[in-house]
Image (cartoon, rainbow, N blue to C red; front, top):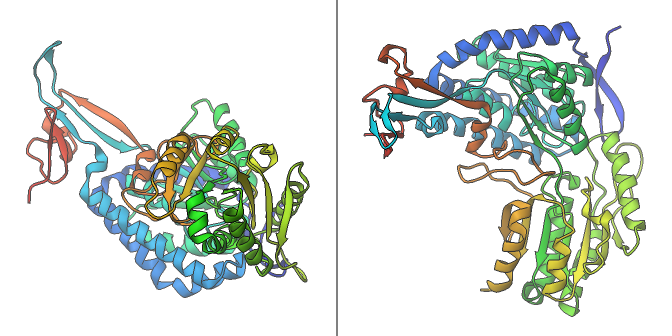
Length: 506
């Protein structure tokens, strides 16, 4: 019997509508076959054609902004301000990848002409990156417009020339379906082949998608357990494929004694604003803050407690997240060596609201429980007495997406030492700001050592495209069979020719 895919309002906990039926194995097979058939034609659109496609997708989302944001707000309770910002980010990201295509350095084009070398005669060799093939993308619960049907995975895969089949997230199936329909129509308008985009609903459909032989890579943002489950499916394939997972992150934050003394109250308020932002459902939420012992640190903690006590109870994304938050946060509060400092507003009525919490512990005897990610509006303050105690505590930390240092005016020695200690454990080091915000740019990425991610190239920033490309070398090839970017005299992208970097002319 067909299984309904139901959209729920997290503010009430009530089912609102049936969005679709869970995708059957036969339909998954059809969508994957269509993506495989579309791959050559999508590649043949070329860089110019795919840049036009990406801009058409961005324009289509902008044209349906009000509809998309309204559905997403009803389905996630994230608020229209946040969701409008998220949609703006997504449209910008699509257009940024259009610029990446036009600039062309992502191809890593290199030409080595035939000639003598210290190893003897060398044949003519020409290398560049080509699309890997159809990609499976798993939408994330907490970013319905930036890490879901639209977002970095989809944008970068399409830019690379790879068709995309998306697994819609069960937290926002109506948003996923609406956005998919907008994008699919726009892709047709831009001349993309049928099968460029596909969507599936349901857990089993996601498993079938990952196992399908047409799928050549998987992009996933979610829990470690979810990532491990997909990795197990991939490992059982006759031909395992790359898995690009963005999974779990504690995101430690260090307040130096000088910073605490200069602006302790401000730091306290801002830190609470960061860990409660979006209901604490950011993968970059600062879950563990190291604050110095003594009166200066006390002011930070007191300001945090005051802010938490007046914090509203946010609505979390779904029943599972709300239940998990309640269990894990209560477990943290009861852990040995942990004290509860403040609670925020208590939830009232139905729905998936949660109580903000602030906890404290000692950095000297850091409990293992506080080094695990807790998705939701809770953070732990670990008080440290001196640099030696602080650095010793770092040894107990898992790797994270980010590490943050809040410095005093002109302070460099301790921030430098903290940076050197945490650089091996984080993908992004932040100074005098907060990690809950990831700009999209050429210099940005969104990774870190396991368990934060398992790859060098992640879904944020222009290097996201590198995940869905593979190198091919043409040896002794006649000019007629070469991609134009590798032909002699081509000068519209950066290339390395006979070892020398050549920039575009004009």
